[in-house]
Image (cartoon, rainbow, N blue to C red; front, side):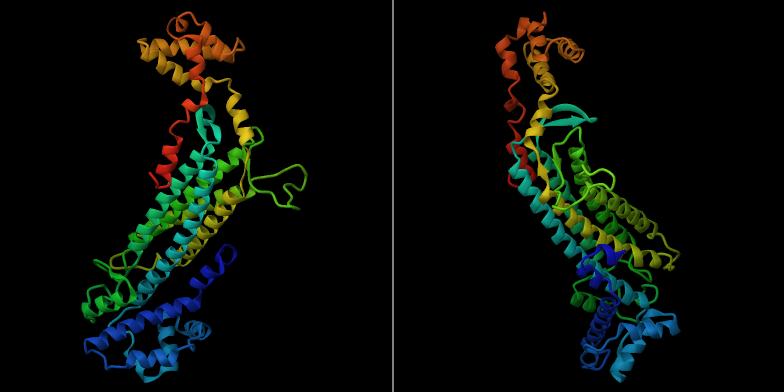
Length: 434
């Protein structure tokens, strides 16, 4: 799936070539650390680096692996083919997972950095639309039913805030995953000095696993996959919002529709929210990978290999899918056709019922018990919904309400600006400008 859904940068990041390059980085960092404390003759890492520059062949390593049935041994065999004697100083006291897990941390960290950049692109698009439609009035809905007014800008700001939180989670997960181990077969440093690990990992910009087994603990990878799932869910939140806006009965916004684009093979009139529906589906995949990551945490003793096959699919796929979703969501928001006139029309369709809460509060302020005032306002609303008068006139004619509220006072409470007076504060807080 990675080839279908990822940008070139992700295809390269998870390629065999990039994987073997990362392995060599780890091996050389360890060799140089050993040179630094006198365990390996000076210059061996430099000799291997020079001999292998531009000559490591992923194809040759895979060819050897077909015989050895062991990827790291195949890799080391190929490096020896190229570099000769200096290569014998590689992998001293190490186990395969020292190389695999440390290099995986390097790749996951880089993937996270690309994802953070893509997230920033979506946040910028949401911010622009939030400011553009800060005061574009629309009806808020709870349970799908008209509630009280809000603005399209507030909706965009809410999405911005959720994506921002997902970005923070991803940043934390990047730190959690930026951990390696050079601790030997079961993590007890049986044949390697912990100083080597400290020096080598610092050179790679990683931290040592607190207590390693044969591997880096998999709760770190689960955290990373769960951060991606939460990010995907934030994107899905946007997509579902757009899909509801585009429903025929709502028609308050729609995805951009290009010249020559077709919506249905049977119905020429159709314009469907296909990008948003696509994103909704992909979010389900990301949550599935998060579940797989959690299942990978518990392993036998110091390690079994049940997690490995999962990760080889889940990590490349999840990072590439998340990136694809972010870019697609940015396209959706950037090209979204917002329809302020339809938002206002829908807002007005309920005949001012959204003011019921304000009327209730005003009656409480006038000294009436809340539940009694609630019943009075509800009577006026239900009469209107049954086809009897307007809500506003029913309030003015209600025997109890008119004792406390004049017609002018009721009219003033139907002013839309009452409901939207704090929008600017919300937008500023959401965009980090409060």
